[in-house]
Length: 73
Image (cartoon, rainbow, N blue to C red):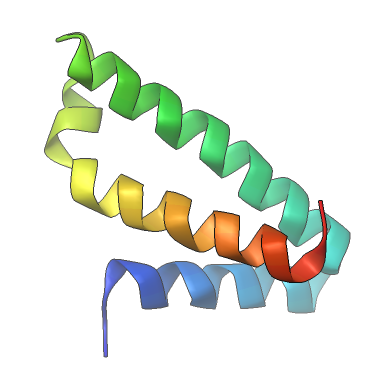
C-alpha cells in the first residue's frame, strides 16, 4: 500500500542500506526537526508548506520516531 508511512519506511530502508543505521537515524532526527518546525509555523499562520502537507508531515514524524525507538537514539 502506498501511504505516507510506507513511503517513509522505504526512504529509511534505502538510506540505511546505502549508508548504515547511524546515517538513517541522523536522517530521521533531522526530518523530525524540520517537519515539526514546518507544522509549528503553519499552526501560527506562517508556513503554507506545513499547512498544505500537515498530515503527511505528521505521518513522517511518527515513522521517524518509531525508527529511532527501534534503532537507538
